[in-house]
Length: 93
Image (tube, rainbow, N blue to C red; front, side):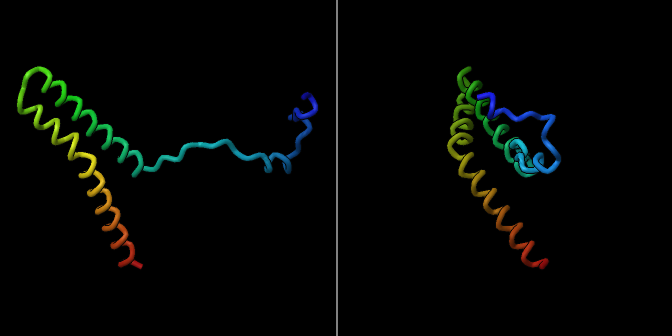
C-alpha cells in the first residue's frame, strides 16, 4: 500500500501535467437564470398553497393552475426561445 503512494517532492513538471484536474461545476448565465426561474415558480406555488390552506378559495385555484400548468409552460417557452436563438444565429452567418 505504501508503494502506491506518490511522493510529491519527486514529481517533476512533466508528470504533473498528466494528473487530471478535479471536476469543477460549470455554470453559465443561462443555466443560473433557468435555475432561478424554476426556484421562483416553485416558491410561488408554495406561497399560493399556504394561502389556500388558510382558507382563500382563489389562491387554491391559482395554486393548481401554477403547479399543473407551470412546468409545461416553462418547457414550451424555453423551447421557443431556443429555436428563436438558433434561427437568429443562422441568419447572421
